[in-house]
Length: 228
Length: 211
Image (cartoon, each protein chain N blue to C red):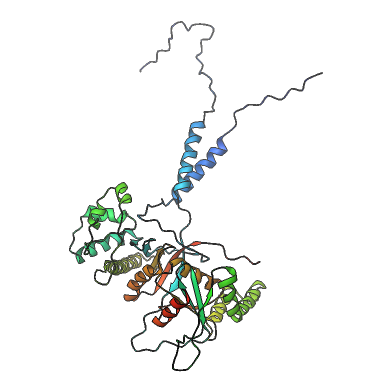
């Protein structure tokens, strides 16, 4: 009986299309990547059906499960100038290097000046830490009781500086005859689902005291209830 | 001019013409592919794809001192407490032995399941939900435009006799419960709601009920 001979095929295959695709994807991800920032606190937000995206121009207060609050401004220029103004308010001078570092940081939760009974890290020291050490440092949260309301000052100065920057951008755009799209500053609250509501309420009180009533509560997206 | 020495020793054989060595045009791409996929994996894992989602909410301003709290018709009040507890009552709050002689308010217990809160809100907000469903139907049939639908739906939710919900909580409730209630209100098309502080008498009643 004659054996059927299988055609001999070359085991190496043309990888060019695959390489093309791989590099295309690499390029795509490199360009779109906004690298994940390590925040000093893990906040497990509750879920809701809301699918509104978080605006770009926000001041964000994170509240962790223990009720400690952390402050963040998305815009790094505004961050730097807010730090400068806070330094003036509390008589602390920050060097250019420190401002630059602060501009690249994410949220922080340490006081700028000590409050009675506080012995932990202060903001100046916190800024000058190595990144790896900063991540492991335990933050005590920004004080916001009625006597030492540093959180309120951060929000106030952040708000003023954000408004100044928007004005400067508008003038610049008008000079160059370019369209200017103003995005109002929003206030985001990112609280952990397990936080006692009283802690969130205290932070909201800080905002309502300075006439800010509209918030963006950050939530995870969940599917709406399906009809049975 | 510089001359290249082509004499390679004993190379004077049959061929006088020097021929370039014929080599394959294919190169081994495996290392490059390895690298490409390594980078791809790295960027896929480190990139944060989606921006976080948010829920917009307005908090009521503190009323100026001396101003009576506004009377609302068709109100429902939810009170959150420890261990995911949730109570509600209808209309206004009447403490025990009030001047008007109205029977005192009692708190009714409910829960976050679809049989509890969801069902209750569907029932109470029926007129609004029916009206919005009708609008949705019109939208599906292309009788009204998308923007018209949105405007009419908001108007329907904000009607004077539409359900108004007050969300209150004691000191022990957790943030998730508040979000869950607001989320449920959004699902059930309740347009008028507010997170407000609780009165002392309500707190007393809550503590008495939730022993």
